[in-house]
Image 1 (cartoon, rainbow, N blue to C red):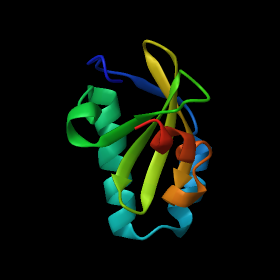
Image 2: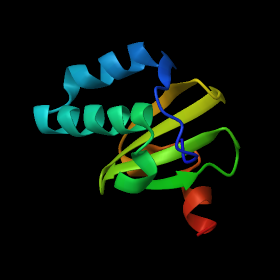
Image 3: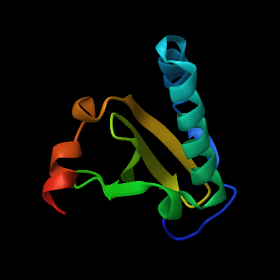
Image 4: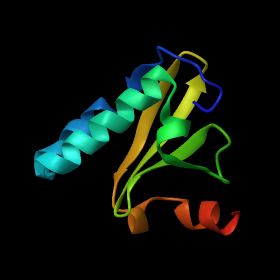
Length: 101
């Protein structure tokens, strides 16, 4: 993600994304899809706040907006997965990530 890798493939979390999108407003969906595209093309670190997950070295939090975060993991260099989409305060492990700043 932060190393500029491009053409990453979403390999897990699509069902979670669809379930979240069922209840999200269109503006939120547009912002999340834009952030996910930034992950795939390697620009997420330039365009969004990104925090390392202190509990999982292969995971990061992408701060989409002040009240919305995506937690993604990177199982290998060519792919990523979504492990959480939702409010900042509900993101698992986010408090440790902020404490490390």
